Length: 386
Image (cartoon, rainbow, N blue to C red; front, side, top):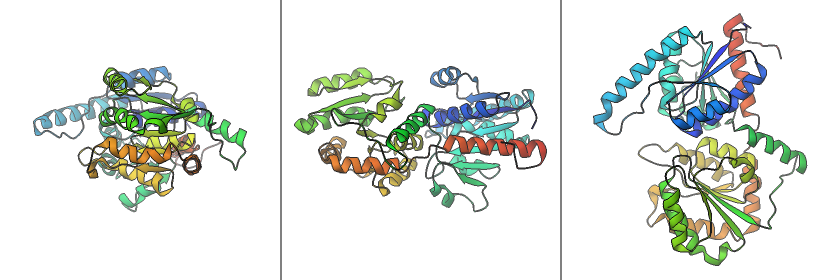
């Protein structure tokens, strides 16, 4: 294998796309320490901070999602064309060996540019139903690494695909392995019940309906929450409004805009209310935390419903579909939470079932796939030395 290897991870826009890429990049750096690794993203501040904090180079490439408003159609065309040509130049000038598409619109210009230059590409698909971008790019990809087996049914039969599971942040992997070591290989170690913890995750950008409805729902639960600590991550720009809502209804909660050390918190938590991104589900599985999923269902983007269905089928979670609610979301949350906060046996059974979905080897498997394709590209073989 040549020494001058340069791998570009293309995409971002959300932590659900970025974190799996960072996890794989960390493994790749360990196994190919001479390799150069760069992230090509949207230019958002959280991307730059996260990538550079992990020790990798970062470059911004123009990109735009498919517009909901026809007046933004011209911007969609111009930005993505500009991103494509900027990526072609970058890939040539910086001698890129392989491009990993992290999913979503932000990955498209760079992955397409790589294909046009004959550079190998690997796609990560985090959701049970692949995005339109993955369906389009998969036609020419060298491999699709899928988080769920369900993806197969949505892509052409001849698509090169391997089900690796979704890569999780290293802290989740480390705590999972430590937990298994303490509990024994065939046991699930659960947090103690002296102080039960309910965590609400609004995401980095904030989940408006969760931020608005959770204080109202917890007020209705009343004494059933006795003995529970509530931690609510609101997302950027939502902290003060959510904090006021909790104060107005008289519910005590630790309300923060962002949780830096989410892994240790979830490993000592008993229940989570959150959206249902593929990366979120993979990390909840490693932590073994049952969930009430409220999937993001804006417009036609229903992949989170499919993700949640995987956990519901495993009896590890319940699901609230906001598109089919006849009443307010806070009433639905009360219906789902009332039994879960009072029924320890049910909650523990769900925790064990959630842990059964864990794929701690996901990042390692994706890294192996990348190394095999790099080796095939460089030598014409498909085997690599260990």
